[in-house]
Length: 214
Image (cartoon, rainbow, N blue to C red):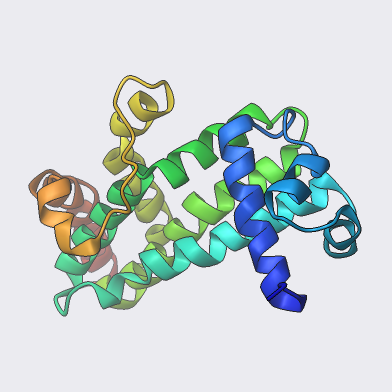
């Protein structure tokens, strides 16, 4: 049965995502995407009038799918500090996944030509993650909004280094298999993340207590 409406749109997005990841934005034509999706060019352009519009829609789809896999920090553990550790660990685990790592490489490759789209992709993966972590820290640690945002950004930066640059430059291999959350403790060094959390968060909490007079 031929796909129509929203089903066709989602199928095109999934097909385009694979095409962009495999061949790059510049080398992927709308004709090739239509053929790969087994739909007509007319149907493709009815949903996405330009390749830039299609790529932007792919980025938004990545945002939704990534968000579903990341969830929010409070969903990882009842104890707030351990929730932060596991949330950051899940972020590291997902960055190693080929679908995410290749999308990052694609965004970097297209940053000069499509800066807004590259910035959108950055926000999908790093901006949203940092904001959700900051909200959790503000709620559970008593940090002010600005302090929580700084702490979240610093923590994420420490957690992904040096893994992320090694991944982007192809020094370390990416993982083709979907990283399941059940394997988090086997895939990621959570003890390292706990140490980083103490480095970043304990001084902030202590300063906050001094300021509040406790």
